[in-house]
Length: 163
Length: 73
Image (tube, rainbow over all chains, first blue to last red; front, side, top):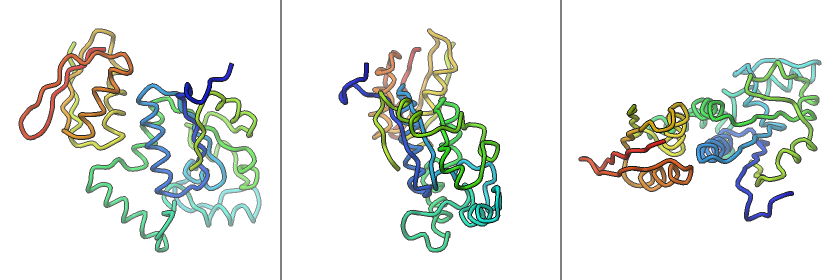
């Protein structure tokens, strides 16, 4: 039986925007929740998939010309834009420096912690079809490539947040 | 066996993430001494440990605004 809203402790995070600052927020919430014994599921779709690519920089992966161009333009984890004031990609690097200075964990560290904490990573099948990439193009943390029905089933007892 | 963890150079969420990961590797009955800063960490780490069923045996201030807490798994 599904829990009422008050009882739900687990969290499902939809990572859609693929923006640097929002990815940090997603992973902060995810690792914080997992570290306090909540079950956490992360579902990556559209731009969010860029953070999961094995190729961290711009690489033209994909099954046809258009998706290769698209993947090259989007890049990987090293190219995630800031949601505001991106300044052509300078800002994420500046922000990384500011974080380092203040001892705030970098995205890599958060993603590693997420892996160690057993946070489940799912990739959206539809977006992957559009982008022309497959599971081998993504990091090993990705459990499986799923559709929205699976996501909703897995999130039945969880709060769903969209980042 | 008593373990030690210094999280004075970490910020949220890595503070309690690191405590949680360390506790997960320990056996029941073992103890973990954690050196942490005042403020948000001191408010959150002991409480989240207790919420997860670990025992916070002591919380003691040290010099320079840090605290030493002892947790038993």
